[in-house]
Length: 141
Image (cartoon, rainbow, N blue to C red; front, side, top):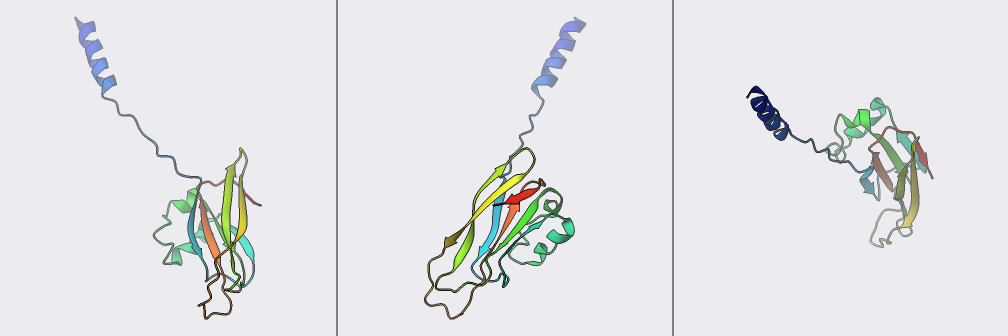
């Protein structure tokens, strides 16, 4: 009789257990891609340290997109095109991201944006900021 009751209790406990569903994050997310507001020179910068990432939290556009725990679990990449003419401006687009056992390979390309003939500005400075949901070393191609 004790064995039957014990078996029933074990069966009830086993059937009531919850299964934890883990939502998988995408490998990367483009936080912003602006046609103007970047730097004068063309560069790619990888932000890995929490104190470097704190710089991004000062931007009102990015403040809601970056959480405090992202500074410990994510890398960020700033892709800057430098100065461009608004009539023939290019912008940087993330073509693909591959994760290998040791690192993450970020493939980017320049894409022509549509000319803005109503633009009064002589020069624009396009840039993009990408969040990589990994702390593996990055390689930019």
